[in-house]
Image (tube, rainbow, N blue to C red):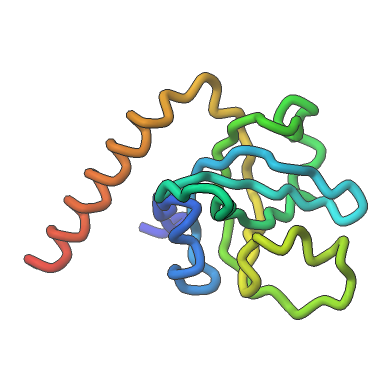
Length: 143
């Protein structure tokens, strides 16, 4: 039976460790929307970092889904769930295209779906995803 590959659930902070072209699903908070390039900068402070360290953040290319993305999903502070592919970033001399200094320098996400996460119980989400990923890791190592 052929069909699309399943996505890998991930914390935003773990995205750089995934292979390029992996299909991923993750949660992030909109830090900014770079209108000129069609990129969202999403962040999630997990694992928790203390100031002055900035939370992990990633560029998300939303050009392919702009017709379906609402203003609410582009609003700074909105929590969104992204389904997309890990892509390799090319070095850029353009500061606007590169995004903030805190974004992952080697990868970006090419979004195929961006949906509002709604009211997120963040601590519970982090605990459930952490526990679920640990169970999956143990199952792989046992098999």
